[in-house]
Image (cartoon, rainbow, N blue to C red; front, side, top):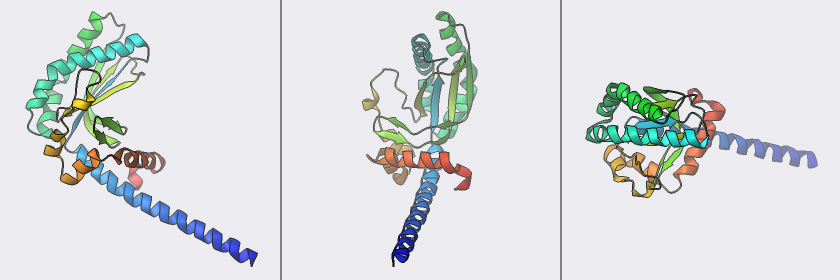
Length: 211
């Protein structure tokens, strides 16, 4: 009797594990498709500091401010993600020149690299918007050894704010104009960050190719 009880308990536990695996995989697959739908409409911005030293972090923000001050009007004028991404490609040399000018003015002993290409992003919150982890078309600026903390934002639709502590002023309706109602609901949900974190963990464990 005791042996049967143990076997029953083991079977129940295995069944629960299988059910959890299937449900999690299904949710992850749905979330991956949703992430791809979201990514298809966005151009993101990424600046990586040389290191986490205070001087390098300050330079990262100066580069961010200078590049955005010049580029933001161009991205704001774009009427589609494709147009914004094309602008980014065309303006890559200019963004590199701006970044290197800031570095030179501040006597930094390193330069800058600018790539306009797909880039992997973690789960990231911008004010009331939470974007899932995954690959997005992006402007990626790497300063020096690029071993410091990153700055992230969204170039299209234009959601990059230069001033610190102004995330609460983000016009989240810009997302609603380009995303499907379902995707917009996902990125603005109060509980979505936890869900995206679960999906991010799933990606790390199993890889996107296994979905």
